Image (cartoon, rainbow, N blue to C red; front, top):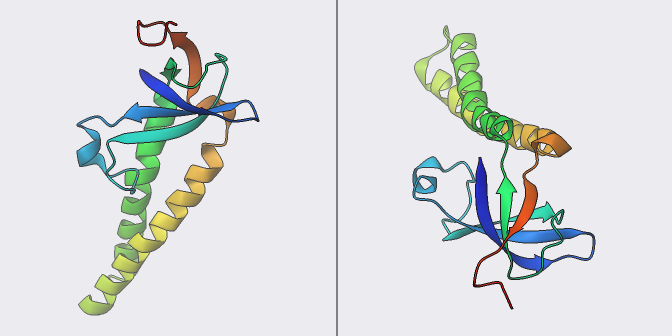
Length: 138
């Protein structure tokens, strides 16, 4: 999947901050668990030698998107089901507390998995090229 973003800042280490407009589908997802801004900023390797203000084409691999969805949705579900099965013989209030606690722990596990897997180069979004538009031609 490719998206077009705008370079907002060039960093000295060969990276660029790219801003993407938030899609309508993002409002229902809550995967970012962040503020509901009108945009999302990513720091990407500046492979296209883009300048601040340039529009760039960025490839978001389907493997990365699928893994992110798995981490965000499947990990908490597995924690909750495991907690439920392990506490079947306990009183309901205790069982509920353990299941809710496991969900909280699952978000910590998801954050760790996210940090581990998205540091892999093949799963990171990649800047492909500068998109030539009438806005960025000088």
